[in-house]
Each structure stands twice: as C-alpha cells, then as structure tokens.
Amino acid sequence: MIERRGVQSSAAAGTLTGIGVGPGDPDLITVKGLEVLQSAEVVFVPVRRQGDQSYALTIAADLIDSTRQQVVTLAFPDAASGSWHPQCSTIVAALAGGLRGVFLTEGDPSLFSTFGHVAATVREIEPALHVDVIPGVSSVTAAAAVAGVPLAVYGERVAIVPAMYRREQLEETLRTFETVVLIKVSGVLHETIALLDRVGRLDGAVYVRRCGRPDQEVVRDVRALAADPRCDYFSLIIVHGVGASA
Amino acid sequence: MIERRGVQSSAAAGTLTGIGVGPGDPDLITVKGLEVLQSAEVVFVPVRRQGDQSYALTIAADLIDSTRQQVVTLAFPDAASGSWHPQCSTIVAALAGGLRGVFLTEGDPSLFSTFGHVAATVREIEPALHVDVIPGVSSVTAAAAVAGVPLAVYGERVAIVPAMYRREQLEETLRTFETVVLIKVSGVLHETIALLDRVGRLDGAVYVRRCGRPDQEVVRDVRALAADPRCDYFSLIIVHGVGASA
Image 1 (tube, each protein chain N blue to C red):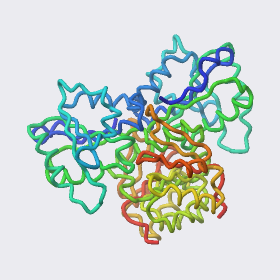
Image 2 (spheres, each protein chain N blue to C red; image 1 turned 60 degrees about the horizontal axis):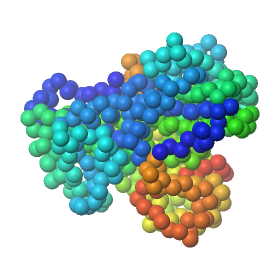
Image 3 (tube, rainbow over the protein chains, first blue to last red; image 1 turned 90 degrees about the horizontal axis):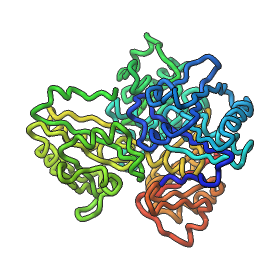
Image 4 (cartoon, rainbow over the protein chains, first blue to last red; image 1 turned 90 degrees about the vertical axis):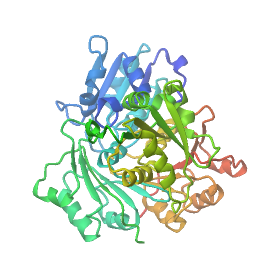
C-alpha cells in the first residue's frame, strides 16, 4: 500500500528503497522492510566516517545474505554543508542496468536520517531512478516502550529536538510541551541535565542508550549520569509527565 | 532485546503486551510484533464506541487466527475523565490462569494510543500481571514516507501536536519548529488551513489520510481540502520545509 512510484518503468535506472531497520533489535524491522531488503541486489549502508562501523548494518547484519547481496558502505559526514554528490553518484552507478538497491537507516528514514538528502541527490543525478521509503520503528517510540513511559495521550504535545542545537529555544520548549525528546544528547549531557534541573523537569526524565542492543541502558535518575558520562550518538532523554505550564 | 519484565514469574496472572500494528498496511507490523501477536491466546482491540469497527483490527485482521485466538473488542471513550476500570478488569479476568494477551493499537502504543492508560490501570488492578510494549511504525513517519518529505534532518526540530487542543500555542509552534505534524486534524480542518495561511506555512503542508489503507489519500495542495472536507480521525497534516523564523 506504500506507493512504489513507477517500479515497472524503472528497468534501466533501477530502484532505491530507503528502509528503516528500527532502533536496534533486528526483530523490530517491519515485515515489508525485511522482504524488500532480502529481495535487493545491492545494500547501501551509511557511516559517519570511512572506517567506522555502520550502526544500521550492525542491526541488520543477520538479515543479509552476503553470498548473494552486495553490501556497499558509504561515508556521509555529518555537516549539512558537505556535498554528498560523489556518494550518490556511486549509488546511481551501482544500480544502473535496473538493479534493486536498498539504503538502510537505523530507526526511521524520515526522522534524522541521511536518507532524506540521499533521496533528493540521487533524483537530481538520475531522475529515472525510482526512489521510495519503507518506514521503520523510530528510536523515539522504542525508547518510550523500553522505559515504560507513554510519550503522549489525548491532547498532549510532543517535541523531538536535537539537544545540541538552538539551545536558546530549548528552555521554552521544556516549559510548553508535555513531552520533550532530546536526541543526540551526547556531548551536551551535563549542560542538558543542568537545564532540566533549572526548569524543574529532572524528575520526569529518562535516559535511554542503544535501545534494543545488547548494551542497552535505561537510566531513570538522570542525575546519576553526571558522574558517569558514558554516552554516545545513539542516546536520548525522554522528558515526560510534567511541564506545559505555559 | 525489548525487556519482557519477568515473564517467567507471571504464570498465574498472565502477560499483556501492547503491540503497535503500524499505520495501516498490515506488512508494516514488525517481525517481533507479528510473532508475539500470533502466539497470543487473547487479542484485545480498542474501539471508541461500542459497535464501532476497530481500526487496529481492520489492519491486523488477516494476521489473526480466529479459530485459535479469542478476539475481545473493548470500548474506550475518548474523554480522559472516563474511568477505564471496567474494561481493564475485563482484560485482567480474561488473562487469569496465566494466558498471554496482546492489546493492538494502530501506529505505535506510546504515541496517542489508549495503551498508556490501559497499562497503568491493569497494573493497578493486578500488580502481578506482566505488561510490556512492542513498538510499531507511527502514522507520523509513515505519512512522511508516502508523502516523500523528510520530517527532520540535522539540527531540525519536530513538534507533534493535536490540532484541536491548545490552539493558542499552535501559532507559536508553527513559527518556531521546522516541522510540525498536526494530528487529529479532523473537525478543525478549516481553521487549521486558515492558520497555516496566516503564518505563511501553507506551501509546506501535506495532508495524509488513512496512510497505507486502500482508501489512502495524499493531498499536496491543502487549500483544495477547504472545498472537500472529507476528513476523519486518521488524518494528519505535515508542515515542513520552512518556519523556524524565531
């Protein structure tokens, strides 16, 4: 039911499907995502820097048949300013002749993933390439599930904000939204804890790291994190249950 | 890897797992969700009013074996004030003796679902009942996938807000967040379109209704909706691409 735009007419240029493999547990991929992944000839996986291990590939490794499927790792630096044209040209070239490719992202491809820019850029390079998305379970809702806290009920409002940008707006957001999910909290963890304390929302905060992976960690007293700054890119804080005073 | 809290010790009281069946396409259930759904003896599905058809059951109907599994439909009125104690007592009683039950919700159980309250209430009634959640694909990211618009990249901020509550804050949210997802837009559609016009964000708005169902509808010019107010509970508007002027 997810529209596959013109798959029939794409024989020459190929097809690229962004697939969200979910937050960490390989069994949280969707039935459709698994089926399309396993039918692909080429599997693209992103890393931040050449030589890094791909988190999406770590999650999906056992779902891929490397004797039959080609896995291509591509480095996408984090800076929005960087051109991704060379990497996207590699994708277009690899699918020429009408191959079916998939681009794996952890979580969901529409939410803080490289796939949004990749989709736009490959379409620019090769308009005949057919591009679509199969959504996945986001780390935001998966973290809520493992922490046992609902994100929103009834008329509540949810904000999903990177903790390290626009910090001047963060205080206002924490004062006006019932639930705030602070992503990419690594690197600004101590300042973030201090801010939560200042706005009176420390008690409703839960820290979740590497949700669904063997090294998953859930910390309900985030004050405890101040002494133990183990933290990485795949960590977030859910602030729930109070707020919305404005 | 999603923790099943103490399933071993729950023999007498049973187990209740909230499962997000995804936004509409039955193939967007997760592999884990499907497995646990099919291993359940009792399948609870929510409706708004007695006699209504359950949207979650409509999505999952073909995944259930009614010769082997008992399907129990429970009415949960929308008002937060209503007590759900009787319905939750029904759940606890149905699982007594150690049965495995699942509670299906469309989308994800943590995001605007009845399951948050159900989980809290059944735990109150029967603390020995083991309750957990298997997350699902939210209609928010699934709608972004079918509309072909990323919700957020890099440092962008996303707000997910019910369109009909706290409307006095909505204008400020539309002015400060790069992406705003207006859910439950039914009933306030015309006022919402007028507001988007006033804050200059009509051009970045996409309307998605019944994402992934056979009657799915994607409307990229939301002005067109003003003349055709077909709209229901399972509709949302994604406002993306501009904003964040503050």
